[in-house]
Image (tube, rainbow, N blue to C red):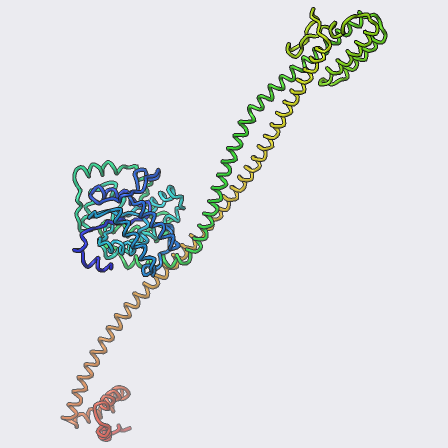
Length: 616
């Protein structure tokens, strides 16, 4: 199906420009510029966010289906391992191809040229080639290249991905995107060049892809100029800084260098990239599972920390609400205390007034012994009584004194009436003896009201104090829970620090593995060079062997022909060779071997029998 797309371009007038770049590599800006130049955008765009205020310019439904697809494959956009090579031959792949083809038709309609962008496509290029082939659309690719340190810093800010993991994501995406887009029209462009001079970048894309953009008028230029502002690039890192950073893997620096040269129009060293890609894939098999477990633990601890933070916020809100309730209660309690203190002062003043009146009554009485004793007992009882029972004690004492006075019939009317108590509770203090004389029942009622009011004040005070104690207990409980939450947060942070430390250890192991693989590759290169030299030598030796064999064959022909024509001559020559010391051991044997191959045994024996042995 892929081959049919590439063999028959005339039957595929529609084109999809696939922006094939890693996360935070300028894919959104590039997609928007291509849209200004005439490439259609999807119908349901992903909503802008604070991290991409100008928009993503990619399809929300396609993004959602990408997430579903990767989840079904047990992967994600942060995964470093490639997808299964056999997945494209499964029924699940065919279902997703059909679903995605329907989405593309819904999002882009019959647009002859449209731009497709999602960093997740870097991992599933073969899948997308099949999708576009099913709806007869030719894929072309534009690969935006951004300094990996800039991309990782931006990804860390937007997605809270550790910078080292962000660098590895960039490496994995770019290696796979470059590998899977080979053989198709493609163009490499630099993100910095796009911001500085987008017109030159668009011309380069058109030249690399062999196409013209339908919308390149003044209006499009003005829109593109207004869109590309310096604020789009929040992180700027020079290539020099990247080259000297020790915390960046050599693979990343090398890959960025290759991609940058490709953006400059130079040829990609595919053989070297393939070897690096293979080495990275093999290394990922070693550190990938460890990194996956570490990330899972980190995500779990992060989720627990977020839950604890939510609980802390809730507890703080409850504490603030309790404090808001406690403050007015404290104010009201203070006011009640002031009122109680005022009442206590009034009671003391009333008692003193009563004592003075009783002294006056005793000094003006008839001298009745019983009544005088009653007054003395009453005054002692008043001194010994508590403030909340003194009114009742005074009333009882006055009643006894009334009885003693009635028995002597010195005074007429009740003692309380003669003492002239007024409405104490309502007036706020003791009244002076007045012309209006209250009855005993009225005096008793006034004392009861005073007692009841005092009890109510005490009860109200006690209730408020109980409520305050309850609120304080709740506050202490919440503060205890808050302290526990803070402790758990500290433990979670400590666990996160340990995981970061483990990640650094893993990174060190990864660097060691990279160094070993680089050393292995260097050794293989040396052996390859040595093998090449040996192959050259072998070829040279083979050539010499062939020449010697041809010469020997020619010599054998001459020997045979000469032997047939001048047997006596060759017999003499053979005799001289037998007599020669240097040839006696080697050359005769060769010649005899050749003769043995060319003549019959009887003829060879006959000729040898004629050769005379040398004389000693």
